[in-house]
Length: 468
Image 1 (cartoon, rainbow, N blue to C red):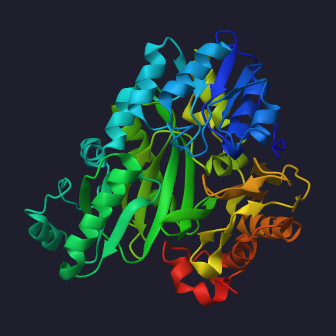
Image 2 (image 1 turned 60 degrees about the vertical axis):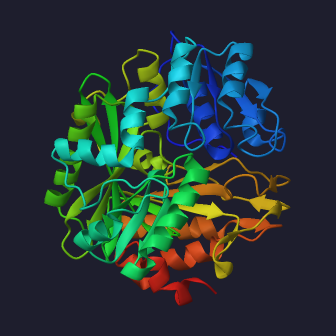
């Protein structure tokens, strides 16, 4: 389902008429909702397994891409562009994942005379190359973790000296990676080359680029990111921060704002760093500057910049009342976005999001596929938002990410937001597949989480308590 959340003061757009959403599932539903609020027609694309999906049902028009896997459908730039041409779309919104951070696709969209609802291809390329992104961040005055130069597949000369200079433990990271994919921790020099070879191979398969680099690993780390919005002319604003420290396998499962326990001075420094990078880049549209923060010292360092809307963007929308997707569409159409200056952004209360996955936490969070025979959700209101593209009768397949829904609760304070989210989880009834629903509830109700003692190692540290 794609329920309504707080209404945003968006007015109809004149320069764009029809938007093709080059994505699926809950983010496609989410983009469609903002398009409808702006009076825009929508075109859904779909693979064969998604022919009856929710995002296809609620769009004004549908175009089949054929195929089953992502590589056969949503990742086919030529097929997506042909769908835009045949449907009469004049803009493409990529959502997140798939082609959203592919600079070649963004350039092809613009070359075809279509509006690309996203940053410039140059910005995507700059931030997609992790080593270049680190150099640009350093040039903007943003703190950057010690790291190495890049190592291409099969290249090991200088690897050990670089690692010894950084120190162990360290991370081997894919240069073209993102979203927690393409990362391995190494604790001992004798394990380094095997980890590098494995990461290079995985990165080559996942991103078409097997280049890696080394980066310092912080033992007690927090993952804190700043939502930014740039206007393409050197101006940019922030939409506050999100703490995304609760993760499994380097991928986020619970996000919240404000980040618990951070001082105003630390937050102000993070905001300033994120906005400085956007201004230097002349960044256009919504993006996220991600930082790793030392939980003991509260020092923070640049991690990466995601040049797209984030999965967890509803957290920022819930505390500000802004429609970030609507702002993307407004800017792309040449209109003035809902928030123009920093003074237009006002945060209130606390918001927490958790991601419901079809997975088996007790078995290493392996995906759970099958038919969703029952999916009952609680009613939404100003304190609860649910973003989902799945209904009872839908099938969770192995072809795509197993996320089913996002639950976002808002309260006057953190305690109220946690209580609202737990109430919502308790009201969910889902059958036919295994999910992480119980795991999420136990995490939210854990004393350490309630006390704000969050870190990226939280799940490993308290796993016996969280997995029944």
